[in-house]
Each structure stands twice: as C-alpha cells, then as structure tokens.
Amino acid sequence: MKVKEKFIALIGKHQGILQKICNVYFYRNPDKEDYYQEILIRLWKAYPSFRNQSAFSTWLYRVALNTAIDIIRKQSLQPRYTELSKFEYNLPESESNTGSEIKDKLYLAINQLSDIEKAIILLYLEEYSYHEIGEIIGISESNVGVRINRIKNQLIKILENGEH
Image (cartoon, rainbow, N blue to C red; front, side, top):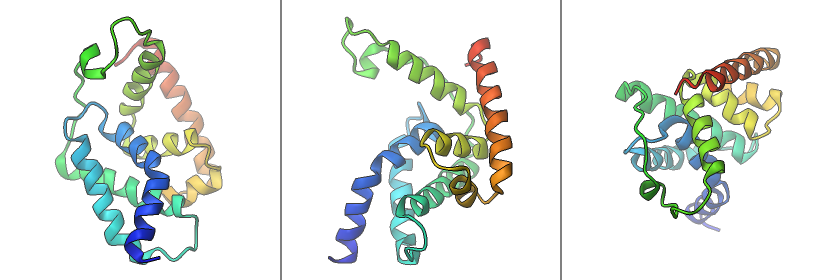
C-alpha cells in the first residue's frame, strides 16, 4: 500500500478524533472546517516522522492537539458564543434535543478551559489512561490525575452556575 493510501485509510479510521478536537477547540467557530483542514495538512506533513513507536491514535492526538493550540495562539481567538437555531443544528422542530442540549452545554463548558485543560479532558473522555495522556501532553502521570480532578471540579462549577 502506498504512503498516501495508508495515510488516508488511517485518517478515515480515526477521523472521529479529529472531529472531537475541532469541536472542543473550535466549537461554534465559523472557521471550524478550515481548521480541520489545517490539522489534516499538518498531519500529512508530519506523517513521514511517524515511526510506529506509539499507537497511531496517540501520535495523531499529539500532532492534532498541538496544531489546534497553535491555531488558537496564532489567531488569538477568544471564545465567541452565539445561539444556534434548530435550522442551524439541522434538527426537526419536533425532535427532542435533550441530548444535543446536554452536549452543547458540555462543549460550552469545556470551551472555557485552558488549551491544556481542554486537551486533557478530551483525552480523558476518550478513555485514554493517565500514562497515555501524560505521554501525549508531556506531563507526568501523577500530574495528569491531579489535573483531571481539578478540571472535573471546574466543569461541575461551570455547569452548575450556567456560566456559558
């Protein structure tokens, strides 16, 4: 299999990770699709450096998270909150969107975290081990545990206070 085809197959298999990263870092940003493309470009450019020393998903998270953080730093983006109508969500009027409302509130709460906190909670929600999270983020395993507990408490406060 050629390099290009192998890369496309791996990205296809792991595109959910990229969607989640974009949702966490660029939720409700009109340029989210452009940033998704930028992450793909950086992954493609970095792909020759992937040496199978870790799982592909671990490498992908590392590159994609660093790219998302770089984009935010370069663009000096501040969270912009605008309410979306049911039309923008593409949901029928009659459909119960309780799940969407919960997801929406969670994304808005996560969006209030720092870039590193977003990365940590995203990996935690994806059920990565503390060791794997530490490896991807570049912090110790014990530091991951401490930060996750702080992030959870912070998210609880945000959600309880409706700070979004």
